[in-house]
Image 1: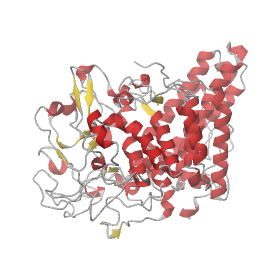
Image 2: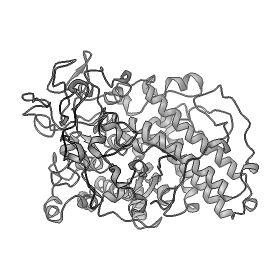
Image 3: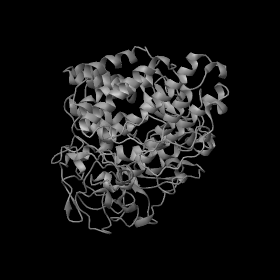
Image 4: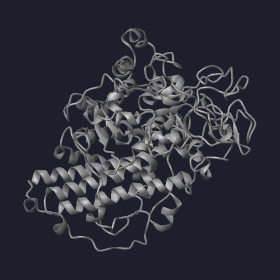
Length: 597
């Protein structure tokens, strides 16, 4: 089903003495000598392949938490203020912008990120010391593998750069010395890391292969650089939109591989997505090899969800992650939860340009329906779960809710609140700390196949780079250059696949719910709709538009927690994450992000 498969292997052949940025008390073990282990190209390929799994698992979980829960589209929902799902507020601090250097998830993200980078450092040192002739390889082939690992390291570094900026160390050695922050000055540190990434990517690109969908390739390399250029104002306080636009055009002109937008968006996320013309790079998941594919859906789904999908999977739903609500809690409470006359956050008196995810989708958008699967055609439709949830893909008896609504019919509402007045009386606007078990629309971005289909949804590869991102980057560059029509046409080249031809004739000239013109607010909203739940919403999208701490959505400025106001406009210190306290304790060379001193 998948054209190229890179399996996760045991990392013993690379050695255990990984360079760490969070553990000064490092115990050094004997390593297998590189010339002994690497005997042929197969051994080199295995060593390179092994690192992908470590990177993929850290990205799909921990970075996803930091990038999505802190933003305006997805939240971790607790029940009754913390009776269920509170998890010591680990994730609530992300949604409420109240984290500190002691927050657990920040520490976990730091540690997993450096594991990937440490593995890359060690392997690059090993490969650079090998004689290609002794491996029956050409020098060019060995250089290709080295370039692949350097690009993988650059990808991992870019992810942490978005989170910690200039407080990072520049750690590219396989030795035991642990460096401190790149500079005592945060801005200078940002420039050092930026320059390193650009140089690393530029030096590697020509040695990479093209169109290798489960590996770092030339187009991936260029997209990482384009991300740097698009966000250069945040990183180094220099706009580089013109350079970004030129690079994006080269990618779209197929200079770095042959790609095309999909007419059917489902090809991007289905079981055979490695064959999609739009997918540039995807991390390979397969049960028994690298089992992380469940992470894309399970956080959103209830414990009895297999009665809906007709599956027999071992994975259980978490039932705590939701789309941020589109409506407040105005009106009379309904027996199944929710209220009868709520007000949309898109409308007065709110008029929010952020959040309200489900209602941002046009009603004619083919994605805006409950997920169903047609066993006769093998095709699925929709990517949400809303309203009454019935067994057998909506054809059977109603599923039962648990927790505060135990035994009642499960009816998901596009609202968040304590409709039973448990834990705290219902208020017009409440934070995700107070979401009953039926609060919030649920997302099924990657399809879940019934057992009868013979397809395990956990085997679907996780898409990290796709051509539509390049189209959107170019569109934003045009928008920032004053060419709003050019931006609109580019976005519409992607957007049209979500509508019938008759609907598109009208929709193409409509900016969509909550907007009256094709402007920067619309551009940011389109980023959110296209890449919903793909681990990038805070990333630098909200920050690039200066909306991450300065933008209004949902409960900010409209409710309190423990007597404290959650302000509409937050402290700008939250635009970067702090280095974890544990890292500062063991590595005195690290310098905390100055906003947290």
